[in-house]
Amino acid sequence: MRYGMLPPRERDGMLDALRAMPEFLAERFGALPEEVANRPEPDGAFSPVEHCWHLADLEREGYAARIARLLAETEPALPDFDGGRIAAERQYRTRSLAAAIEAFREARRANLAAFARLAEADWSRAGQQEGVGKVSLCDLPAMMAEHDRTHREEIESWQRSRV
Image 1: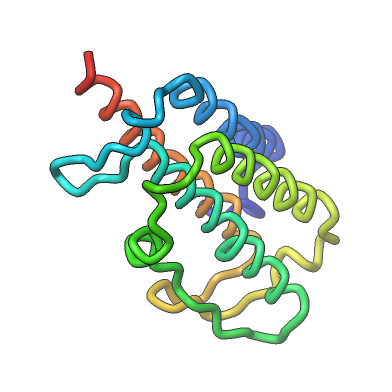
Image 2: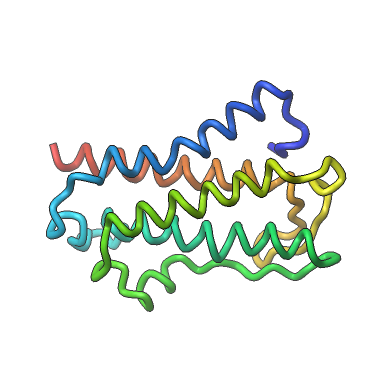
C-alpha cells in the first residue's frame, strides 16, 4: 500500500511502527551474550547480529540512498541491495551487536526525519529500482514497514526456537 494513499491515521501508525523497530531489536537482542548473537543458524538464516547489521546497512545504503537520489535526480536507476551477499562480504558475525543496533537506530531516525521534511510534491518523485520497477518516495515507508515485519517474524521465530 502506498504511503501517500493511506488515511492520516494509518500513515501515523506506519511511522510509529517504523520508529519502534530499533527498540524491538534492543529488547529482543540487547542482552544476548556475544556467542549467542553471533552464532550461525543451521538453516542459513541470519543470526541476531546479522539481522541488526543488515537492517542498519539497508537503512543507510538502501533506503537513505534512495531517498537522496529520488530527491536529487529525475527518474534515477536505483540498485538493489543484496543483503545476503553484503552480510557475507562484511562478515557481520564478527561485528558488535550493540554497534549494529545503534547504527540502525541512528539511520532510521535520519530517514524518518527526511520523510518529515518532504514537501507534498516530493512524495511523487520516482525512479526505477532494480528487481522492483517503478518506486516513488511515497512507496518507501510501506516498503520499509514490510521489510521490518519480515524481520520481526524471523526474530520471533528464532526466539521461539530457543525456548
